[in-house]
Image (cartoon, rainbow, N blue to C red; front, side):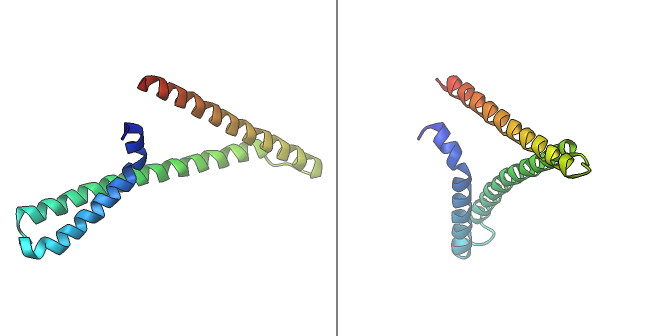
Length: 122
């Protein structure tokens, strides 16, 4: 499996390994002894795996919230406070152009980053 495919599947792998380890630790903990090194080791590994998943998920959510806040701030800055129908239509057009420009610049940046990333792998 190429490293890029592994990276795309890593959240699923973390959750699967974490839940599998938790099930193993809880089902076999009584037979192994709840204070045995094996049970404690499995449950500690589960804590690390699920903690890594939670951290990654929190970073993704935080970036989404920051992007939303920047988008709203940009919209308010461009929109301003128009007075009258003609001013409102002009403000709407400015917002539409600013949003389209931000989307195009994001697409360009993503394309350039992808090309740069693919060159570094070869």
